[in-house]
Length: 241
Image (cartoon, rainbow, N blue to C red):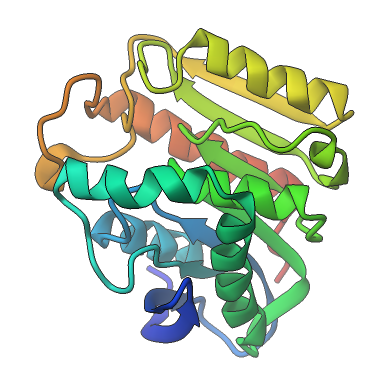
């Protein structure tokens, strides 16, 4: 197995001290990089392990923080923080830009080759970076199929991949249709993968998830979604030795 290095990084955003997880591939050369956003509960070992897996594939990866080092396991507390955040594109962009600046400051990062991958709220933040005109090579969002302010999707300059469970009550067909209509009207290179029978947060193991109606892990589709994201990165952000 490829030897990777990891470390915790701290940076200010949203009035908090964010605590991210940086994973570096072996070697000393510059590599393409991935900004990895967690779902609304916040950064957990699930995202840290995904960042490590990306580093093993040759990417610099930063799993960024949403809540100042906290994991909001109480759904009510999570919603109280995330719903106002998801309604405020500028605030989402601020959190995303702060993490992106940290990733770009890493000497191993090739600043011209960065992708954003996110889940739920983290995916919505990646989309907002695209709508803000940030130069990204790809955006992948699982469950975070949010729509933006009118016309701003035209600033997205890279392919967008979105994944969602067919039975996700938080991202129902009307939300999916609004998202895809926005992408299509803006001329974005987009694709949507619907995973049959999957609920919200199907990608996330239930070990640290509370039991919430409409939320559930689907191991097979979780693995498929990961492979789809890796394929997107291979297409848009290939690692060259």
